[in-house]
Image (cartoon, rainbow, N blue to C red; front, side, top):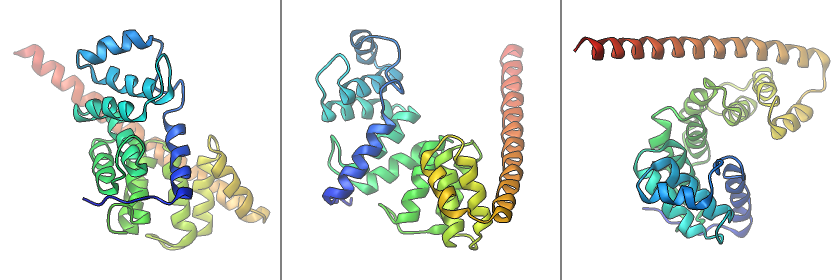
Length: 243
């Protein structure tokens, strides 16, 4: 187990990231604290995760990061994907729990291997930076691509960085621009990267054209995945009905 003491600057940065990931409205839902608490006490994982958000954000109860993490952990241990990803972030930061980058990677991996895009992007960043795991740009790119196949903007930005710096893939500024362009639809950081990178009109045209091609590729993969899942679901239903 690797427990690390973060620098003040890094801690503040990661705290902000966690605050954004558990921002009000993202996991509170419409129910009151009392209603969610009742369900969480009965072991419902989605309610346990919500309750953790309540304690984290101080909605209907005094803010308590340690209690927030304890409820998020209960949900994570039941396989609730959002909770596993959130617990990974808390472990990485050391907020409400001792900072442990290796444990963070373990929780990200649990959710990532089950297809949760935010966790795939987070796991990719761990490989990219050597956080809690040996630095491996090739694996980082692999996880970013998995996240991107589900339309994840963070994965798009990170893969853009990989192409921009030639890490895990050959350096390609047009490809980097294309991934930034895809993420820029909803992400301010990507918009800034586009503004910094793109000055030449012809370069921008090539980047935008490549972004359209990538978007079509992603949509095709998502459609194929959906069709496969629907087919498998239909087959399972028919087999169950035939018993």
